[in-house]
Image (cartoon, rainbow, N blue to C red; front, side, top):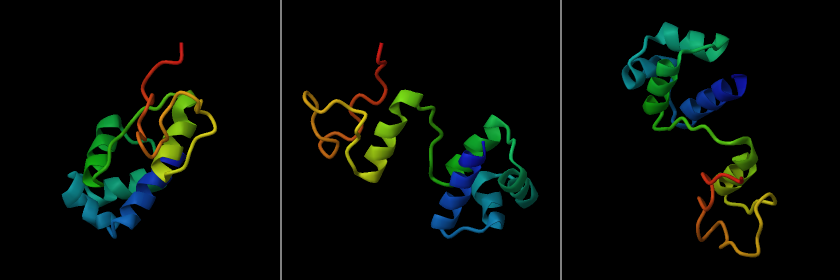
Length: 102
């Protein structure tokens, strides 16, 4: 959970927002937001409100796809993805992201 909370804090700072700004953007109190960011364990509905307030989305990514998703977001190629029959990630950064490997 700490990784997610660190990402939330980083995103808030990227947007130039203070914790108090989240009251209007996410519809939660400054104290509730501070508690979430420092101590964690937010409810799912709170996470959804915060993500919306940060112009972001919550996603579940299968572990075997994490490297490919990170590579797509960073604009690099993924060593985990077979290259022979695929377009480059710059052509289609979301290729095969949600397909099962089975």
